Each structure stands twice: as structure tokens, then as C-alpha cells.
Amino acid sequence: MKIRLIRHATLLVIYHGKTILVDPMLSGAGTMPPVVNSANERLNPLVNLPHDSVNFTAIDAVLLTHTHRDHFDDQAAAILPKHVPVFCQPEDQAKLQELGFTGVTSITDRYLWQGIQFFRTGGQHGTGEIGQKMGPVSGYSLQADDEPCLYIAGDTIWCQPVAQAITAYNPDYIILFGGEARFNEGQPITMGKYDIDQVAIHAPLAQIAVVHMEAFNHCLLLRDELKTYLQKQGMQERVLVPDDGEWFFHVSY
Image (cartoon, rainbow, N blue to C red; front, side, top):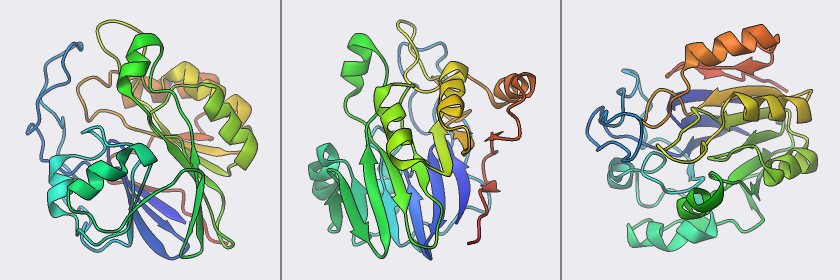
């Protein structure tokens, strides 16, 4: 297994010999409007894709946690091959099929593909009325005979479904969507420092990486701030904060 952070939540996961693209947001910097009712009005994405980005047409599958525009944008819908297998939560299947994708599989609980087990996990994209308006989101646990267990939590705060996923799958490696995204009212809708702490406490043997930072205008927790916090907590060896374009979690079994 090895993983590359492309930008935000867009990941390239090499797992069991397959190349899986997670949550592709492929638009150029500044080509999308800002998230309204947030702390600034910067155009999205805030940064471009890495200059040596992947050939997004040379992938084996796409895995979507949900289809908010910072996880699946119009550019991704336009340039990804329509025949590529796309795995998603049930709520997004019809939308993807309407966009012309012919290999869409919605995962209710689990799905076996090319020797990889995908287990869909739950999450909570915020609290109260805001959390309800954000709609359903999913994470996934990936397992294969020759690979460690990988848990991609998706757009969620620390909540009971995340705790249940950690207990159920005992992941070796965890990817959290951080940034502490928020609106001008209400609580954060993605993970911040407290949430990351809780994951680390409940998964004491897992290696953790935090992505979903510094690429969308409502994500306010910066990498340097998080790294400083992790250093003070003595967690810097367990919790990685990769840069855009960086490879991480190199594992050979």
C-alpha cells in the first residue's frame, strides 16, 4: 500500500495492486465560487493541483465518500472515463448515473472488488441543523489479504459511527478529513484538533494522516497550526500532516 495526497480530500491509493482515486476535485485554482456564509470569500480551490499530477484517466476505480463539490466537482465529472468503476454511497448512485458513468456501484454495507473488501462506514458531517443540511456522508474501511486495514473516515466530526468503525475494523492506518471546516454559525463540520485527539485515543496502535486542509475557503485549521499542536501533544510520530503531492503510508507486506 502507498497513498498520495493530491489536494484536499483527493487521494491516490495504491492498494492490492489497484490504483484507486478517492474524492476527485480536479478544477484549477480559483475557478469555483467560495463557500458562502464562511469566514472569507476566497475563490476555490485555493491552490492548484500539483504540477506532476496523476494521469487521472489511468486509474482502476474511483471511490467517493459523497458528492459535495469539494469531493467530486464538474471537472472530475467531465474528464474521468465514464466506464471506470465508481464506488459510492447509495444516496449518490442516481446522480452519478445521470452524469453518464456506467460502472457505478453503491455500497450499502460491503462490497468485494478485485480482491479488495470495501466496508462502508458512517459519519456525521456537523451537528444540529447544519449537520442535517449537509446530508449523508460515508467513510470506508479497505481490507485485502496482502494489505493492512485502511480506514478513510470521510467528511465527519468525531462521533459514535467513527468510534464504531474503529472498534469494528481495528484499522492499521487511518485517513482523517481535517481542516475544521465551518460556517459563520454553528460548530465545525469536519475534524479539528479535538476530533483528531479522540481518534488517536481510540485507535492507539494506528498510524493516522490528516488531509482536507488549505484547499477550500471554509477549512480554517492550517497545517502549521495542527503540526504545532501535535508536537506539543507528543503525537507528531503517529499523526502525519502530508503536503499536497506527498506520498505517505508506504507499506510492504
